Amino acid sequence: MNEYDSNRILDLTKKINYFVTKKLDEANCYILNTCHIREKATDKVYHDIGRVKKEFRNKKKPIVLVTGCVAQAEGDILLKKEKYIDAVIGPQSYHQINSTILNLEKKIKPLNLTEFDVIEKFDSLNSLKNSNNKISSYLTIQEGCDKFCKFCVVPYTRGAEFSRSIKELLLEANQLVENGAKEITLLGQNVNAYNYKSKKLSNLIIELSKIKNLKRIRYTTSHPRDFTEDLIEAHKDCKKLMPSIHLPVQSGSNKILESMNRRHSIEEYLDVIEKLKNVNPEIKFSSDFIIGYPGETEEDFQMTLALLKNVHFINSYSYLYSPRPGTPAFNLTLVNQKIAKERLYIFQNVAEKIKSEYRQKLVNKKSIVLFENKIQNENKFFGRDEFFNSVIVKSEKNLIGTIQSVKILKINRNTLFGELISNFNQKNCAA
Ligand code: SF4
Image (cartoon, rainbow, N blue to C red; front, side, top):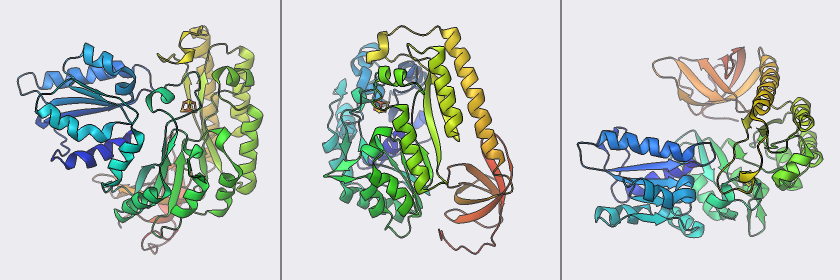
């Protein structure tokens, strides 16, 4: 979502004649768009600002803005501690970026803009064409979260759940397709909680699938509780909807899920998976796991391991629990860290084995790949198959923006290498 936000920030600043530069020392304005999910996010901000300070030691200071979720969560502290920062702007206030820059040009500072103006933000953005021109583009359809998992900062940084209207999303999706997008990934912290005047994610997907030159639709990140029957049915009916689903579970133990306030049980989670497999047996799953959450016993951990083996996730993103300031879980007693690290090690080894077995089975099989770009200075093209695996093939002809059948010849940990099966006869994306 930060990538989407950063692109939209650039669309906004063009209006006041601020354009992107790759040369840091040329910048008149430095915008650091931050994410608060990972550990030590605030330290990274100070480190980055230090780098800018050093670069501009003997030059005119640029305007320095910190945007995104760190600005939202720790804006006042940042402004107090690092005077080099001119303004902090939360993720629901970045539509005010131009007026902020213009104020700062007039030396009005420091500024803290961290209100939750999400309606106003999207109203401002809707008047601006989305200029992103990637083959695979992002589109934010929903923001915020009402679930309040005890370990998570999102409800406090992105605010309450908000869904954009189908009309404005179709308009923006059409802009992205006109710019060359063949695939759109719909984004939301709780993407399947999308609900605009009773229209749900399944309704939006069906509308988007009518865009002729849009060939693939994905969405992330889902919550098991919001996986309603209509969305499951959409996976049967909509051929443009890709058969890979990222469905975070966090733990395999009902006791831990309850203490996390996840609002779903393992049985409910597995029920969603079974229903999706029933409508399309090809669907593959990936998930997020927190290992060593406060209160996790060996038995709880074994349940998580059993779930991993049972579902055969093709990608498992696992992290050692680390407390986030301001969350209800912050003060809970940590699991012995040596034990927690050992569990993470065991978990990641099993996850890697499952992933590698899955990928090994792809060798000598056919993959359907949407090619996104050319590898610099080589006649090789990069794309993704329907399950979001990275694929590289050699080709003398330009494959960008086309969907091709590829025979997978070999694999490494992160990439599949193959050769084109068909002659080059699919002019431009004939999915
Ligand atoms: S559902 Fe996701 S975004 Fe919402 S609080 Fe839980 S982990 Fe955070």
